[in-house]
Length: 149
Length: 149
DNA sequence: AGAATAAGGTCAACCAGGTTGTCTACCTTG
DNA sequence: CAAGGTAGACAACCTGGTTGACCTTATTCT
Image (cartoon, rainbow over all chains, first blue to last red; front, side):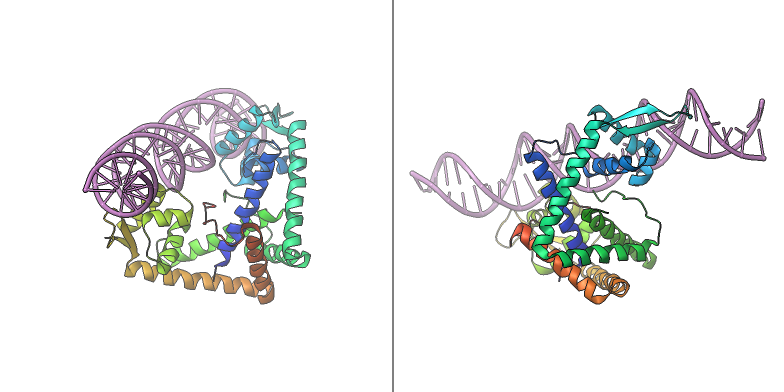
């Protein structure tokens, strides 16, 4: 009997691989998951590199590396912080926002296919079940994403 | 709304972290997930380093590194292959088998707690749902575990 | 049988994605 | 206004993988 974590990991991989494949089929360069998480984070709030590192659960240095990649590729730019001369806000460029929108659609597609394969209700139960478990383990405070990837 | 893969990843982490913590509490040295997967694999079949690499989804060199660690720590030993003078069988020592048994119990505990937190039926649905999805994606041929870790 | 090719294992160089540690410039608080 | 904390850059290092070359033994193909 497969242990549950194995199922989780394999499903995660399977979805991620599909995502990656389709992105490439379309010719969009497939960034790493961490990049996607940064996009999603930046859509919500203006954030500094340190904020990003915290959200990702990595050191600020690691976050800085990711940010400067994204900058180099034109998905993001750093602008001076209005009041704090040390800090910089990292913000999504149009290219970044477009990528995110596209990726979100793709995720939705994949999820829809999953729903079709295993049933809407089953998928809904999985969602609720996992979310409930996470609440049970961590209480209300999310621990950041932390490198699974 | 959280994307599903995120839920999968976070749950995987959460369970893995708990496993790790408890193992350490008890004083058992916490090996990495890959080691555990090797144990589970070796319990079933006699295997060479190459087999292990294939099962794990990594190169034989990476597998060799893992195996020699396990050997060094006494969980495993290499014995000459009866008919093929190039090859060596990797087999579990008693220490390795004990570790595996212990770990399996621990996993069972964690899973039981999960069941308690979210309901037996929900957990069962998750199991079945994920397994069904994996079949749907890969057909019958398992692709090996591949580093999620 | 003998030659070409494939496969197991090891060694070595390298790479990616993190880490820690240190430094400077700036901010905040007593 | 001095003391301590924080954003960010730079550098050294670690881990867990990779690729490539090689030797030895097996297998396959004339």
